[in-house]
Image 1 (cartoon, rainbow, N blue to C red):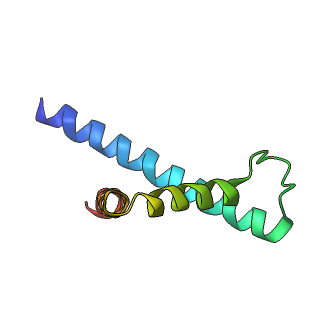
Image 2: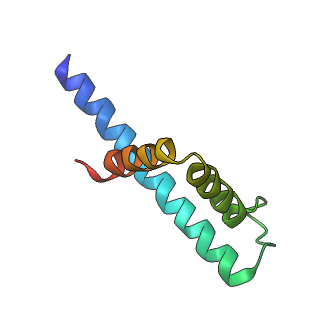
Image 3: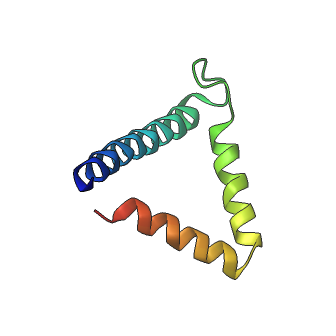
Length: 76
C-alpha cells in the first residue's frame, strides 16, 4: 500500500512540475510575443495577475494560501 502511495506521489509531483514549467513558458512567450501567442489562446499573464490580486485582497487568508502552495511545491 505504501509503495502505491509513493508511486502516486511521484506521478503527482511530476505532473505539478510539468504544469509549473508550462506556465512559466507561457508567461515568457506572452511577454516576448505579446498577447497573440497562437498556441496559448488565453491571457496567461492576465490570469496570473488576477489570481495574485484575489489572494492579496483576501488579507491573511490569501497569505496563508500562498504559504501553503509554496510549501507544497517546494517540499520533497
